[in-house]
Length: 367
Image 1 (tube, rainbow, N blue to C red):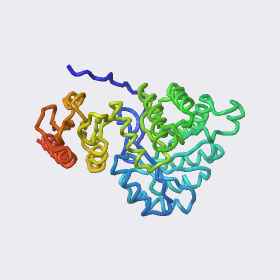
Image 2 (tube, one colour):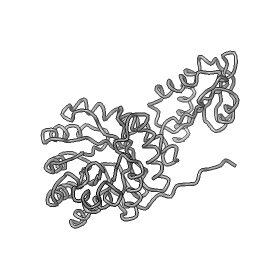
Image 3 (cartoon, rainbow, N blue to C red):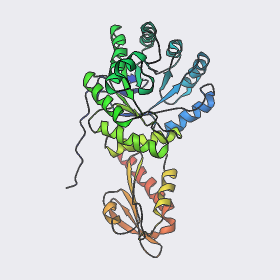
């Protein structure tokens, strides 16, 4: 009998709705990213949003730094294929403007949005337009009184900042909010989420803020986010990278797939290769990832360099290749050896077999 990983029991949270995407409750954990373009560049921003959508973004956040940008933000929302969250700092009037003009949700930072009256005004605008709010606490921009009280950013300060902002929303009978308590220090970030999860049933947006570049940020984010997900904490996530935001979506999906929490697209199992390899594993994987990026259906593929572990991994894959000798590799489907192929033709042959397999799977679903 095939061994199965223990099922993660998710924390019970209330549910909110960002556009057509449910967050919290029993909804799938959604994957988010944020645009890096100038919001006043409407077409450039829309192109980046569509690129993010193509690789699996459920929600995209767009910064709105000025009232002028708010006008262009409305045009972006109108043509976006995914719900758009407006990222607001400092000027509460911008939040009111975008709430009235296309935003699917508002993200405000209690550390810089201003006095209670300003938060109340944002709350009213969200209520009037049926929008949820994410209260985004960041260790780098905590309220001065909290820094004075605790001496430095700490989990207690992060949680207090979140709950204090939520109290204002609660006073106005506004419950459609989520929290994030992000920090660049891994343990501070994780502990803040763990403590906040004990004190609220609001959905939690996970992320390690300012995590770094593609390699370092991926490692840091993967550790922190999976640490929390393994405890059942988290309803939506963003992997923050100083890199192309498309990579954020790819890493986010990789985390969820590895935790068996969501599935999407081609999942490639590949060996790191050694002197035994009879096929260009690295080049084959790189090429397949590029060619098959459009596939949204779940399918497992194994690309293995030799017969040490190749046949075993092939048993657990829907399509697999295992490097052999004399420029010949073995091709498998559903664990069954189909024959041998020329190793230097593996990419083309694998792509065709994978696409044929996906087509058959979809045909069977219809039947």
